[in-house]
Image (cartoon, rainbow, N blue to C red; front, side, top):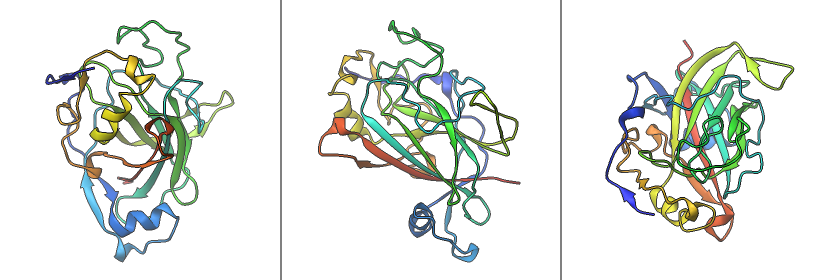
Amino acid sequence: MTDSPSKDMSEAPLGRRTVLIATGATAAALAVGAAVPAAAAVCTLTKEMTEGPYYLDGQLVRADVTEGKAGAPLKLVLTVVDDSTCAAISNALVEIWHCDALGEYSGFVGNNGHSEADDGTFLRGGVLTNASGVANLTTIYPGWYRGRCVHIHVKVHTGVTLTSDGSFTGGQELHTGQLFFNETITVAMAKVSPYSTNKVTRTTLAQDSVYDDGGAPSGLLTLTALGSTTSAGYTGTLTLGVVTS
């Protein structure tokens, strides 16, 4: 595996729209479900990111999106808050989608040069936030494909209706963004199986055409090790504030 200096502009950032992310003591309090008075809210402006070319409508509402895909475990803890007060938003659907260890998206397998089964749903899905505004999702650490750094796409919807087939419909889409990963951890992850079998040239975080080196306000996750080895995986946390009006 080598790193690429090139940037793929097919996923260049969208126009800026104001959303907020809780930081510092506010984020810590929200993570454990504590109430945060409006006067105490400390929020930082951040950006929306492009949806990208691999979104599929009507994905499943489920907490575990792995479908048996090989890779290091990734536990996402994403907290949704109101932009004006930083108050937690319950029953918001947080939807994610990303590529597997070989850089392939379900529904688009083959775009990164690999041949594998494609049932159209792996590593896609969403879950409703709980009373503390927290969405807990289980997936794997993403791989990479040509022109992009390691990332996860995310949408936040409110007012959705759950359907009998396990999906959702309706509601309002409040936020479209991307989640990013510490480069040092990604370098280590690329050395372990199955990521080490992905021979596609990897674009680093600094080289990416979407990530702007803005840290958490630009979607950089806080990663906490789940064990003593890289392959044991990580918990990724981030608090997203969304514009509700």
